[in-house]
Image (tube, rainbow, N blue to C red; front, top):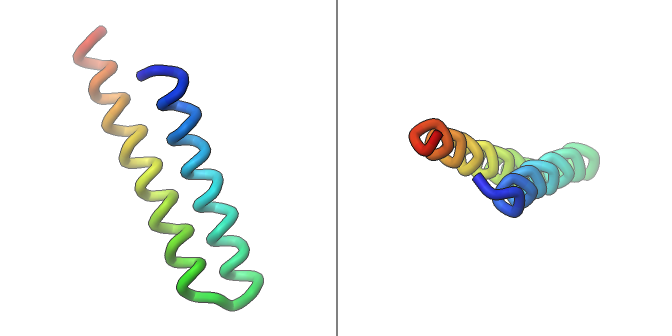
Length: 57
C-alpha cells in the first residue's frame, strides 16, 4: 500500500466523519448518512490494501 493510497483512504474517512458530524449538528439525515457511507468506503479500501500487503510481503 503506497503512502498516497493510505493518505487518500484516511482523508476519505476523515471527510466522512466531518460530513456525519455536520449532518448531526444540522439535523440533516442525508448528510449524516453520506458521511457514514464515506467512512465505510474508506475503511473498506484500506482493508483491501492491507490484504494486498499481506500477500506481497
